[in-house]
Amino acid sequence: MKQFSHLPAANIAKIALGVALLAGATGLAFASWIDKGAAIFMTSVEAGLAWCF
Image 1: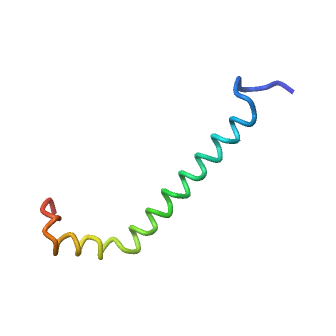
Image 2: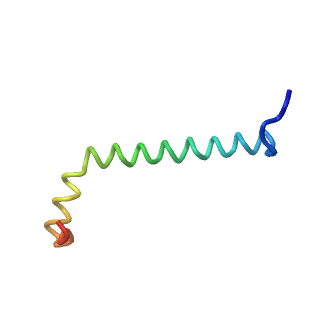
């Protein structure tokens, strides 16, 4: 079978796992922001940190 990459399969698997973990962490952070975004914003307004809005 012809190899399409000069990287070994183990390195490709590690890169794929890293990308999957990063995507999962990003999705979790986005879901948390959607769930608690209004409370985070109101807390920053009350503390005087939301001056740019």
